[in-house]
Image (cartoon, rainbow over all chains, first blue to last red; front, side, top):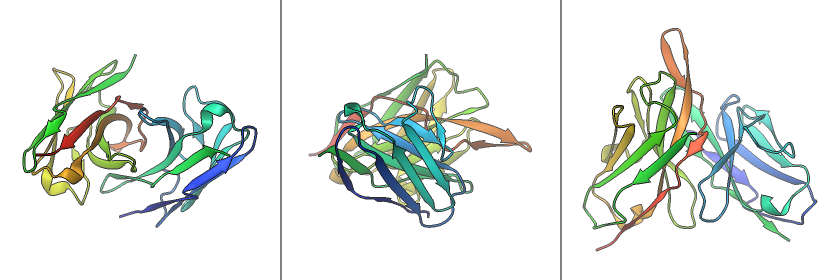
Length: 109
Length: 128
């Protein structure tokens, strides 16, 4: 099964700074990679799908890139509401299964 | 407006069977382009995908939990049901249901691979 490894585990930054989060797959997932944001006590929210497409209503400061095994979520200028945990997720075509990374906690420095 | 809502017991005893229901609105489970997954999250830990049911009623399960899981749907009630047998304290978690859109090609349908709507989650504690 495909394993997703996210780095770093924790990222400490200040509002206004640029955040770069990484997700590496143990084998190619093509572009079937999504990113989610989760705040305490809330369900995850879809940010990016198919590696680089922003979901409906997601601000332009969020962007995704990559293909194959290496993916990046970039937040161009951090807003106070962006401090949360971020997960990447992939789906395999056959058999159809899904995998999440272990998460990156983005905290205020 | 698309919504999903999980329901079920808040407390189960070890060895019991857990049954959770996801009631959806704003879309139809009989629509040929919508599937639903169950995903869980132990307190303070990462998300773990459990099971998925496709629009054509095909099912897929987590390899590690396959022997304990059953997913089904009742389109007339707009509900997706997950049962998990032989519950253990390590199964204590918030359980979410989430929607995944599908696309069809060459007579088969495939998940688009991401979850665009989630329920609020329901915390299930396993304890005697």
